Image (cartoon, rainbow over all chains, first blue to last red; front, side, top):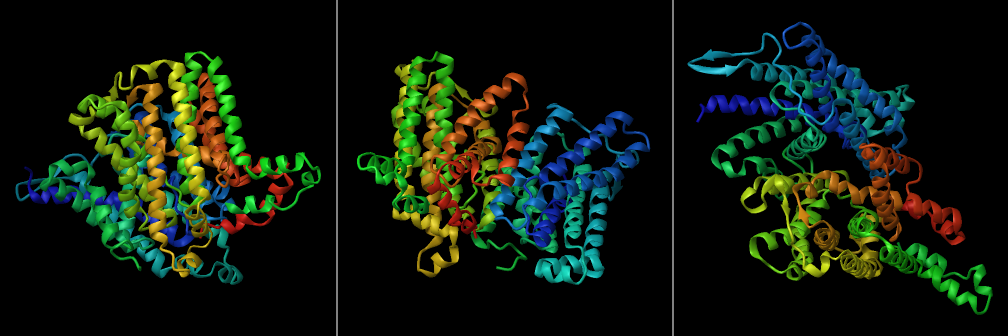
Length: 289
Length: 348
């Protein structure tokens, strides 16, 4: 069995990508009261686009680094496009219409991915400079895991600062409370929705980029990522970014540590945690009941 | 859903004719039952003249009909969009398959056990999933679908994992295409009548009332949670029967019967046909089954076509194709819509 510190590092790295997915879900719900079933599709598209870039340029060159930076932006634009073309027509309708519209998009994205990338497995090499591991006190920590954790912490801090301290942030919070009053004060509320949707999709795209080198990319990734991200959002408490962070830590650690203690439950650990959470406290760890 | 029935009991133009009046009025009033009888007759006529391939397609269409109507008990009548009904469909199919493979249990026993086990498992799943409402309920059901898929795939010793279970798991008589078809049609018809009785019962009406105004029903002293869990259990039982029937034309059970794709089928069928009509999912299921077969001849990307169709219907005609048709054809249907049932539905 590997050292407990290495296990912790691996679970923190899992928690990082889970946080990026869950924070997007929670941001959309918090700011727009939208639950996007196609959110996992954005993660899958991020991974697929990066895989295409890697296939075209190989893992060695600087081009992969450009792709890593560009892909979240591309996915963000894709998300904004979906908001403008589909979601805008569902605001003000019942939540079921909205849910079914995103469910239809989930189907459409899944089949488009099949057309664009086929059904075979894709993989992405670890970018140049991030391979190998650092040896600290006789333990070899993989550099890539440290990179993923570092990027996520930076993004989380930036996101928290964006929501708390900037004009954009208070506009989002105001849009939740009273969109009409906000519109009266001269804020373009519709554009705000488009930007938030793009931001959430961009976070999902970033998650896709970060998991690409450590996971096989194949059809079905969208559903599994969506479910995992959603479970994190539920466990942490819906609509709260810090809840998403706590939920990601709980799920990330719970999954790996639980699998260490009870190996038979490895693949279903995350669902066990979800069921336990919903039975004890449906509003989540940091959610308001 | 009692609104349209109430609306058409008012005197209509047809009532003036002395002999035709009561018959026409009866037909309009019981149009759901009439539609089901017509569908059964057409199916029988088509089925008895069709070859084995046509019969198997028809079997699968009928199974999808039952699966969709059972799902729509939650979706349309209860306002609960479950994306995890494949849990119970797969359960029914695996009960028959594993009963045959591991226990040598007779098919009939497993067919009777299917609704009981389905209801039991659905009660457990529903009790957890219904702790959340609206959007989040839907996502939890999706998570359960993933959970069941994972369990079945990993429990190789019992379920043979990814390979699935194939073999002569049904009685020899049912392997005869005509007999199998008659059996599937019979069971489906019985189940649909039972489901119709459920939605027309006081329980069904309460369920619809919860969909329309949850808080008001709660204020009346009705236990909303318990009603919804019960609805989930009933739906699960019938989905499980549909899954057990799946083994008749296909003689197989595999993990994909549990996945989100399978869960999505009855939702798409219901929305296509119309979630506010009992017979809506019936039409939707036929369109989905035959439309998919037609599309597969030309392209392997039928999901894209149905995704776009689903999107168009959700955005443009939320009451589905049949709902839109009734709206255009019948005055009484028009009155039903103008009474604002759709808007009032609200699912709040």
